[in-house]
Length: 408
Ligand SMILES: *Cc1c(COP(=O)(O)O)cnc(C)c1O
Picture 1 (cartoon, rainbow, N blue to C red):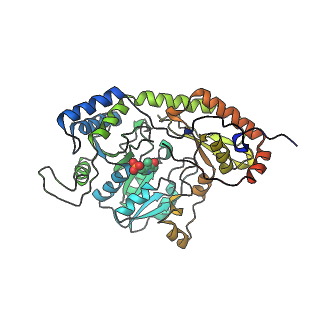
Picture 2 (picture 1 turned 60 degrees about the vertical axis):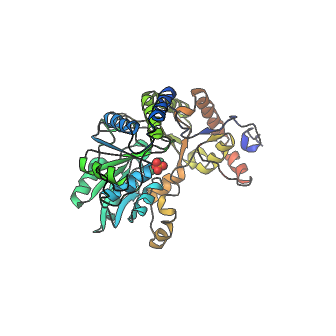
Picture 3 (picture 1 turned 180 degrees about the vertical axis):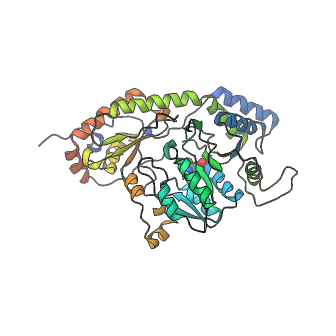
């Protein structure tokens, strides 16, 4: 019998002493951050549309080449307040293959999310399926630019115009990415960003709505501040979705470093491309070479048949090595509560979402991994692939254990 490779899952030494995370938070220019902190200490202006958050809005408008950037306390609150500003109601079509925040934000706004399948090539909303799902109750479509890959924006614009409904984008993954050579931020009626610490550009926690529609931006500014207008009267239903000054300071510190951050991530992505080439059953997804990408997500698809191990088994053995690779959006939002019960009742089926959810694997990337580490990962995967059949049988005999996938 062939000897088992001495890998961590069979009690070998883990490949890495410290865990390698997907989306290890970036930290920008610390001196700049401290300077802003000192400034707000001087004035005691800590929140309520202070000078630092105003400056971040102006700098982001310039960076993203969009007329309005309305900061918010999170991507989720930015989504909810946009739904509220546009008075969306009844049904909104969204992909099932998105972060659970997208349907939750709608549900909080009293809207029923209607789940749509994805185009397997781009992992973004399947426009043909969208068309089938539009009813007289549909008030909008929200596409998610998954891993920064733009949705089929042109076609969605035509479909929404024909149906007389709004088009929005969840651009939480897409900071620094372009469509048609222009920054994602200007498309649809508005685009929603998350500035959570695990995103390529972040403010610890935070988000924004970007739009070229001045009237919509003015509404959003009121809604995020309890519905108050400029003269202090409450005009409408509002919430508290303001970004504090310290959060905005982190944004300015990260914005100053964003080109460098993306350059490091690109180098990391290219190192994976070099290392994974020729390993049967691991297919790295590549961004469209005509567009800019943020290279924040190293996305691979595992073919169990060709690799010899399923994605889940591979993920288990990688975790034992301290390589905390992750699945994504599995098992799809339509299969998560509070949506699951109804999906089961309606017999909803999403073949492309299910398939990608079962096979996709995101490797630790961005600024948290070095080229040397990626070489080690590549060499390791080659050995695993050569011994896949034996490893697969042996892994079946090990008691299952909890996967640890939380980022710091
Ligand atoms: C992160 C994320 C969100 C939510 O953003 P928060 O800032 O965490 O509220 C929404 N949609 C997608 C696709 C995301 O990845």
